[in-house]
Length: 437
Image (cartoon, rainbow, N blue to C red):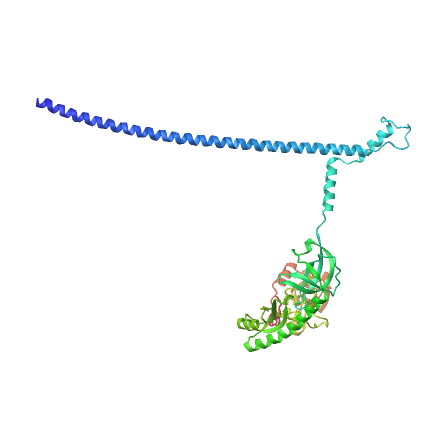
């Protein structure tokens, strides 16, 4: 009995374990099934969304195709209408029956009439050629835009600018005009009469000419000029008081008298804040201290050059170009400060006027000191006259001779290298400070 009871208890324990295992497996299966169902639902949703998007794209593609077909149909219709019009024009252009026809009244089957039409139709151009002609005519009609330009010079700074003439008033050289500028209304002197200029040769946008100066404008300008001279004296006194290393050149009021500008020169940067404060308390205006260069100073003050004429910068030069000692050397000028420097203390602006001609001519010539071949002998180049194309050569056994370029042979590559890498002489180094850059 005890053994049977023991077996029964063991069997019961085994049965319970089996039941537990079966329950665990059932739960796992249920979880797996739910997870699979969830995945299937997500995949179904994605496929539905893709289908919807594909349908939308198909609808959009169909719409675009319809639009393109409609456009193409319209273009075809327009082309047909255009061709019909051309045909009608050709029919209208067809020559009528000649006046001296054999039959009166002339029939439609008249031979002379048919031949005249055929000859005329030969002269009429085809459609493509006619379209090209129309395009060319349209281009000719669309002429390049032109502006009516007036040249204005401001009398203090002597700078010149272009302004657009809006009204139909006649301007003459020497008149004064009120113009619109970046700092407001200003009055200037007409140095160039109005003329038409193309858009390519202008810097746009252009400021307009407001009006021709009236008597009141001229009187206001003269009074402002007199007041500016008084302000110049006061400015010089205050500069001495503050012991600032600067030179006051000129002063001017803006035309609306909202600002007073002092033009000065100095070697470096200057702290003039205290000076500005004192000037502002005296004049009760906006004060501007503008530093300028020595070339601008010469243009404002004015003088005579070594040629005896008024300075070029005061007459017509608007923008200063750089002038180098190399330009004077290539032109064969003596490197002497008193002869090659202007009123501003820099190299003469006129040195650059002919420099390009000399530079082009020098490319054909040997360099100074180069050995050249002269007939059956050799010689050293002592002097060059590039414009007249002749040289001075020290020939071995013959001495110094004047020879044309045709009579001499030399290495052109070596000459160009020496022209480019020519060392400066001590005189040129000493005068380097005269270079205007």
